[in-house]
Length: 80
Image 1 (tube, one colour):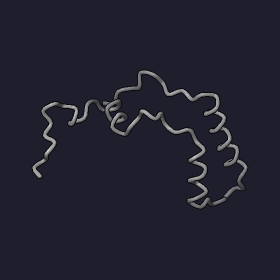
Image 2: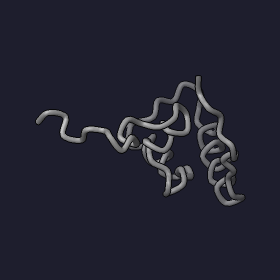
Image 3: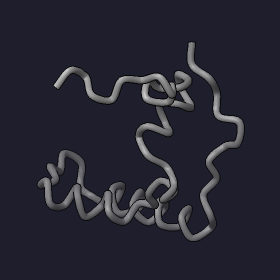
């Protein structure tokens, strides 16, 4: 069972405008337009990213609880 986020992720007005700009550009494309990968990447780079203090491990901890390496008795060697 997943945990819910205690504080919602809220975009600043500048970030909201960046998202609106990307949506406007996408909606302005003719129907059936196929974007090249570099065009998609350029659009994605315009979107606000997640907070700098987030990592994938933090996301997993928030959703599922502690990771094995959070346990002080966790064997880091893994038999190498």
